[in-house]
Image 1 (tube, helix red, strand yellow):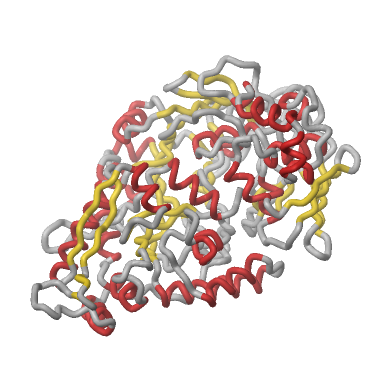
Image 2 (spheres, helix red, strand yellow; image 1 turned 30 degrees about the horizontal axis):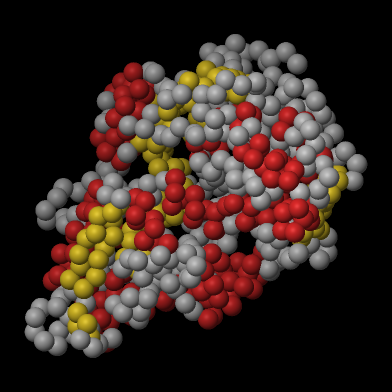
Length: 618
């Protein structure tokens, strides 16, 4: 599920994604930049060679037992691991189910064995062979085989399964098959660089649970991508419709048989509107495997993990302070810096600031006459005091960024410096393009068109509105009139897809390996594609096309570095900041580790000093 189209779809439909940035003039407001105090907590970054960050070290002798209670903002609609798209559902599924490959903690490429003990790629980079471990068992005791892997891929590719966005990541797949119980092979039609990422990423489901009647057995993968065959076989539709509402998918609060996965945790209970819980899988097959010295991914030490659904920020912090929860993965800046400074809190809780793969930006509609010239877009970036926005509203925790790739990933070009805050140069650039007040009415104009545009904000975003208000005043001083359109989120999204906006303020969440095609290639401007800004550049298109099918990572990254140079020159977006989040957890817990991948923490490593100390019986 790693192509940018799905990422944009999930972001736009399931998150309130407006960037947490706004400028406040230093003369009219007190700086929110935190002092260098011990109560600011620990900063977790992944620059240099640091791939994993530990904020509470492992116990010398790891102990089993105990319960962790944490809070997340959203409650899943269901837990079907193929059709669900919400991050809240993934919090459960990634612990109950497993994939063929995981991220290598040294490189953060998806090359670490999980269900597959090894894999091979053919010389033409179009055939992928996965060799499965032979000792894997589902939580009901039945063996996991290559037939389960093949079935899971078929489920994704079945056009009647509600997985349109996920399915787009497998458009290169032309056939898949098994050779014996522990060998799974896939053939692709091209050398798309994320093919291994997608094939290694999907959750594997137990075929005997999800398709007990074998409806998918007669059909090959090539059948499922052939519309003629699909339309002639009603069993394909019948399977898809039943799969979408299968009781294993756990519609919220549904009383059903136990969810069966292969992962280190088992589903226990769900009380709608309150919480759901996981218990440790004491028979987890992978419990003793270590991939990185000092950083083992095992079956988990805790007996149970309770995940409470608390959307209100104040209630979440209150629950943490009262002991109703042990871990708040997200806190607001004012909570983190101002409301968690008491001696009691600092004695009992560890505060953490951790980097994410998200970045905030302003997107300019390049088809509007005001923003069709790159010099005007450069000027708009130079008119925004990004450092002040970060300092006064975000407590200076976010990190300047210059492009649409993960800040600490191998695709990011660190040689590019952000454009400076330079209003004088901005005015020069605007006037170079002919935007001058020809009729002395106080508004710049060109060819009879006044420089007048709207800043679209979501009605639920206070900070985006504050940013718009400050920018409005700054632009008024130089003869540009900007209105503010406050829109309900559903309307906001529709306008974005239809390119009916002048400028928007959004946040985008990246994968560690990102494909820029859907956002930046001119192919995706029309037909409600994801190139919302309408960015067109022939060299950028060529670079993207080459990068997508380049199999050498170094050559591919060089192409993506060039793409970022083009974007920096063209400024279709004003790239603001790489976003960092704030958290706090009870200091009783040890083995707390942070990683770049969402949700940025791994519950299997958490330990309690006052646990039983006893490993579970096999």
